[in-house]
Amino acid sequence: MSSFREAVIDLDAIAHNITQLRADIQTAHTMAVVKANAYGHGAIPVAQTALAAGADWLGVADIAEGLELRAAGIDAPILAWLHDPVTDWAPALDADIDLGISSLLQLREIAAAATTTGRAANVHIKLETGLSRNGVSESDWPELLAVAAELEATGSIRVRGIFSHLSNASAADDEAAIACFDRGLAAAASVGLTPALIHLASTAAAIRVPAARYSMVRLGIGIYGLSPFDDATSADLGLIPAMTLRSTVAAVREVTAGTGVSYDYTWRAPEDVRLALIPLGYADGIPRQASGRAPVVINSQRYTAAGRIAMDQFVVSVGHDSASVGDPAVLFGDPSTGVPSATDWADAAETVNYEIVTRIGNRVTRTYLPVIGR
Ligand SMILES: *Cc1c(COP(=O)(O)O)cnc(C)c1O
Image 1: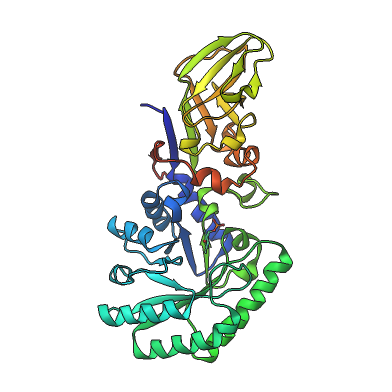
Image 2 (image 1 turned 180 degrees about the vertical axis):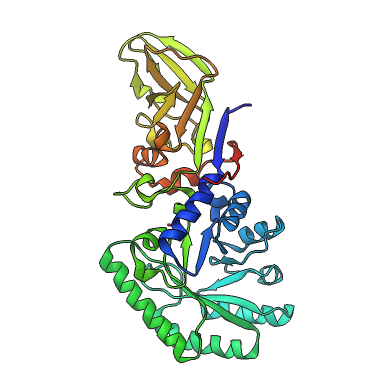
């Protein structure tokens, strides 16, 4: 059993988080968002676990991610919403992947591909409601919705959903976006479009903004057991962090006071100390920005990364404590077990916990703990 570079993914935590969130949120449908390799946790095992735990939809950013799930034999409904400007839509239609639509051009191309392939396209119309990313602008709604209704009448497309995404900038901004979204739903209804899947909220709004829940929520960060809020921890939300990033001490050396450590000598030993080398670096997604600040537990004691985090490794001073090659080190995991959290790393790197877990690289072996029914 080597944990040289290992991300242990607790699938039971994911199952628990889905159950917990569904009980709190109570929408008719729950989408588990497994884009970006399930935020670094592994798209296929996470998708399978989420579905078994009660999610009934999977969300991905692009079609290639959806096709990977299909290739693994996953036949649950999948929505992909971010498309290459020169997409060949046929593979998505053949694989029965629902498509988010952000423009009239996409709608027309998809309808044409549906006619060619002989498979009706299931689409979800994405309305722009204030995030200023993709989505159809309010001024374009009448035309796009009218065309969508016509195409639905011809049978080339089926409008299965209408959706948008919130900025989470403030309660007032979210309220304005919800009001805008409601105008879009009314405009759709006025041309006869009343799809079953109305979805606006990702984890943050799903938990805190009941008015944003509609018939489905799209849950990403929460299913991984991390909090999207600055003022609430995972435990406060009843969630269990699913990823533990661990390693082993690869080398130990004793240095005298004043010895420089790692590139640029941004840290020098303040006294005679023992150093432990951790074989994880920014090639593995460990943020260099957290140099000199990041927390690490070695032999159940908490220390701080000393000096620059390099591509493949970084150094920790354990002071006068003992440390040996092969000793276990944990960078982050479930803080209720006494280890740092992904959020602690995010704070050290001045970023969000989403980025910490998502960037964990391919050199890091993923090991899966099974669902046991916690
Ligand atoms: C990533 C994403 C989500 C999930 O967001 P979380 O904050 O991780 O829950 C939901 N919807 C869309 C459109 C997304 O891109």
